[in-house]
Length: 301
Image 1 (cartoon, rainbow, N blue to C red):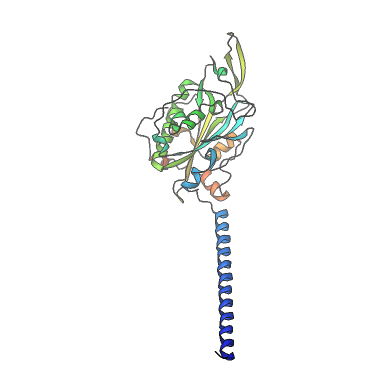
Image 2: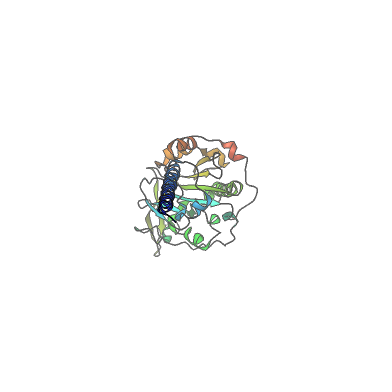
């Protein structure tokens, strides 16, 4: 091979290396650009989380809510804001899926203080001869899918004083209807709690010496529940309820917008949803869209 042929081969090798390096840089830039684009879309999108995302969130904290006078905590299966001055949660929130409504576990009835509340939750004995039942905010029938979930829902952080007729009556009707919606829509997200007012009284109970004492537990005159159907992107809907403990009749007589629940409680719900989407969902009440799916079966609480 002569000197001229050596030069030709050398030049060919140099051109080949340069072309490969340019291609690598170009592909690297494309990858970086694609990643940046994906990140931007993810930060700006206002669609509901996917099923895989929701299952990985501790305490079902898929959506976030403000706290007015409570402190935020997370259990494995629900999140809550505990108000020490009222010795109960100002709200409890969780996702309920179709599969979870078919849970078969028995109700535990093992009420106990909540170990994660730093200021101590209400004591079980404070309900003794108080005239009020230990009313669940997240009902036990929603937690039959898992032993930990069942145990957690009997913590007193998930309990509010409710009159028996209310607890076993219209409030139970709403809980059963909510489970039915979870089955029909595949999943719903629920926020529920008391509606406090300056006129609320404190509960009285009988101690182990037979003496009547005043508890720090506030007796709410009303309770609220918000249900968010976010199963299908573009077809999301919300409905709220504010129901007095003296209420009778049909649950839909007490249906309100989420905006009205926010006004009554002073809490900003779903504050991690894009503002425009939040305004549209929380200000709209389409009762007929929910009444199409009235519950047909009885569920045990």
